[in-house]
View (cartoon, rainbow, N blue to C red):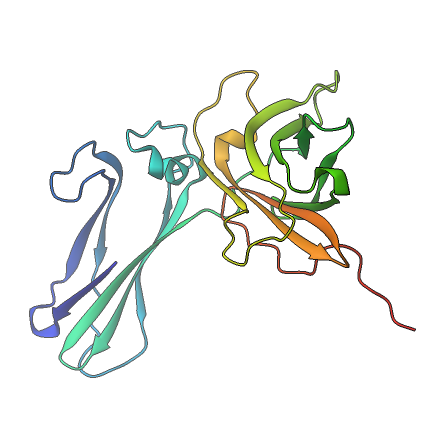
Length: 246
């Protein structure tokens, strides 16, 4: 958020409220997230570097928000910064709110199971750090052109029985020729929320799941990226084994 004001009317302090609302005019379903009072640092006249006026953190609770779109702000926590920068005879205040990228990551492994196709046909997602998991699978030729469900399973290290919990199920069409517009890809964005006993732990902080398709040497591969707590980057590497030359 940006706000421009004259340096001639610059006050000594500012008050900032952070709320989550479903409508900016009527303020329906308002959820209070925080209030701060901070000094406004003089920036003088002319252009200059941005000055940090406020740098704080909030959230990190199990508060259930009426506006579920913002639930991850409460469960993961967030960092809020306010900077002021001179612009001729005015000053620009910028407010940035970022979801906590270091929220706790469940001690668990994740698998995407293709169903109802042959047993064992699954994408084993390997941890690459910071709550990111990825993996890919070569699709048997007889399944190309069909529609399959994808069941994301979580298995926590503390589960001695070794019983995976379903996080969610979606469907995807296995394309003979993956479309450049991404219409045959799958993107899931789930905000965090308080969880009950027996639910997957990744639901607490929320997650993002990206499933794409690619062809290498005539073979169809399905690639998946899962990230707990924040948005993942779509796979960009060429699917399948890297060709060798002699």
